[in-house]
Amino acid sequence: MDTAPAVMAPHPARRAPAAQQPDWPDPDALRAVTTELAAYPPLVFAGECDQLRDRMAAVARGEAFLLQGGDCAETFDGMSADRIRDKVKTLLQMSAVLTYATSVPVIKVGRMAGQYAKPRSRPVEARDGVELPVYRGDAVNGLAFTRASRTPDPERLKRMYHASAATLNLLRAFTTGGYADLRQVHEWNQDFVAKSPAGRRYERIAREITSALAFLTACGANPSEFRFTDIFSSHEALLLDYETALTRTDTRTGLPYVTSGHMIWIGERTRQLDGAHLEFAARVRNPIGVKLGPSSTPRDAVALVERLNPHGDPGRLSFITRMGRDRVRDVLPGIVEAVKDAGAQVAWICDPMHGNTFTASSGHKTRRFDDILDEVKGFFEVHRSLATHPGGIHIELTGDDVTECVGGGDEILVHHLHRRYETACDPRLNRSQSLDLAFQVAELYRDRNAPAAARPSTAPAAAPSTVPATVPAAA
Image 1: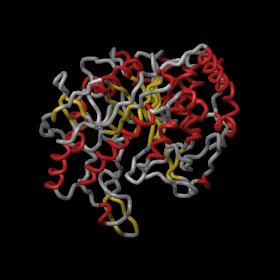
Image 2 (image 1 turned 120 degrees about the horizontal axis):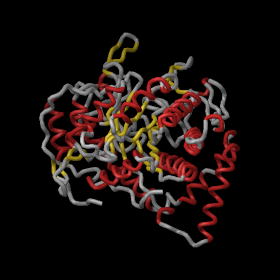
Image 3 (image 1 turned 90 degrees about the vertical axis):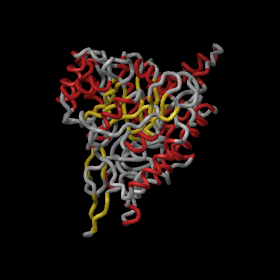
């Protein structure tokens, strides 16, 4: 792991148009903040980013599976040790199930320690005749509908940096201090198996995990992978002033890395080939993801490969597909086939959340668990038909017992949404729903090469409608 200090990288003038940027009211204040951020220590190191890129290369080759998950939008008020611990706990539980059932390493990447900004469909929001800037995440402005709260404030960028550093340090403490012991993680799943109506379907897998762990313990096996793990950090590289300020030159190679997180992705709204986000992503050496929605074309995907990974570096590029359950089987095959025909090796990741959002009769923005699962099924079906690797899932989740998505084994109905609807932006799966999905995905992965007629049904019981030790530390 590289622990040498990085030096500040030059920040070339932005030549391309930048979508989804805040309308900062005071350019001088913004410039002062970014100058200060540019002198701060890196949040992650270049060597850690290279470590993740090597593991993403294994995903692209079909030798590993990616589990990427966390909040839709982190908030400063939600940055507590208990909430971070519970998100980590949920990721570790999901990973334990997936690792055992798939028999491949599961790479864990959190949507955390930097996911404080969100793209929006409109720049303003109107209520009762009053129009104010839209909430763009805690990195930019506040959720309260007042002029003072909604005015973009660059001082929030510094607060995001410090919150991200604290989160990374907590991640390291939880995953190297005994909390990630595999035997303990499996015990956490027992309440799900015992209490969830869907849990009874998964008792066989749970018994197999218990037997395997008991056998290894009896043999005296106690490898470090049982006790420690890695969780890398990722976020959407949306606010280019912040990302550019945290770009550093690696002292080993002289190459630029954005040190705000190990992996960054470019969203569906900002992936324009002539845009500033692609210009920035092409310049840094981190693992890069690009969201592809239903408007994506095979030509778009091939052009993105040529722009972001012209030399075919293994593990450099992931496509995170977010088509929606109604479009995934129609749109995704042409894109995967075009990339395959171009000879490009990318990691294919399924984001089944963003294409399946709707507004319930109660007025809450929500998602159906069945729709989320159906998009994952479609994702696996497409890759099975093209003999390509379904490389992972990208999920918005929380470890809290929220009621934001309907369905799942512990059935949440539309009229339950108001009980604990706590998200700052989009609806998230709660812990039970996340574990339910992990078991379903594990079954899909295990049966991905079986003949279609032989594959068991993976529909949930819901109402219709092993990686190297040490967690990358913060600077």
